[in-house]
Length: 223
Image (spheres, rainbow, N blue to C red):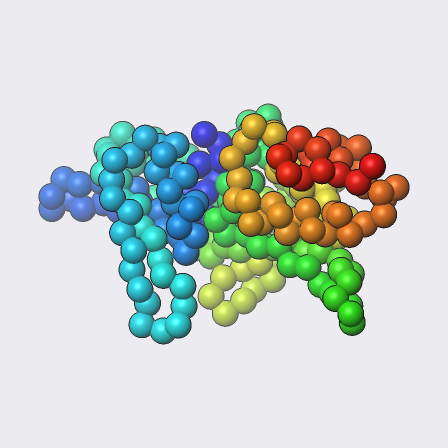
C-alpha cells in the first residue's frame, strides 16, 4: 500500500464535509488507467467522474471515496484538507521507500528525454513536483542519504516547486522505484525510462537495471 500512499500524496486530497458528516478521499488524474487501477486496488465501487476543462487540456478523472476510516488513517500519515502547500514527507519504512516514491512519481513526477540533433537521446531527467517545499526538501535529504543521490536545490516555479535529477541519479531512482518487480506502476513512464536505457551501450547498463528490464514482459535488456 506504500505505492497507493505515495500516489495519494501526489494526486489525492481529503475533503471534510461536516454539514453532512461526510469525510472523503479524492484522487484526481488526467491518466484514466491510473485511476481505474487505484479503484481496483482499493476495492472501491465508487463511480469515476470525468470532467472536461473549458480549454484544450486533457479531461480529469476523479475517484471520490466516502470513508471516515480512510480519512482518519490518512490524517495519521500527515495528509489533511488543503494539503498542497503544507504537507510533510511521511517517512515510510526503508523497505517501502521505493514503492512510496514510485507512487508519488506516477502522480506528480515526470521523466524527460533530452535529444540531440537527429533524435538520438542525450540524457534523461527526472522531476518531482509539489506545492510544499518542505515535502521536496525532506525527499531530497532522504534520497541523498539512502541511495547517495547528488544534493540538489529546490526550484521555485509559478505555482509549485520542483526537485530535479539528471542522468546518473535518474538511473539510481529507476532501480529504487522499480526493483520491486511485483509492484504496480504507470506503464507510460516506465517505458520512457526503458527507451533511454535501451539507447545506452550494453556495457554501461548496470546489473540491477538489466534484471529489472528482463523481468517485465516484453522488456528485454540488451545482452
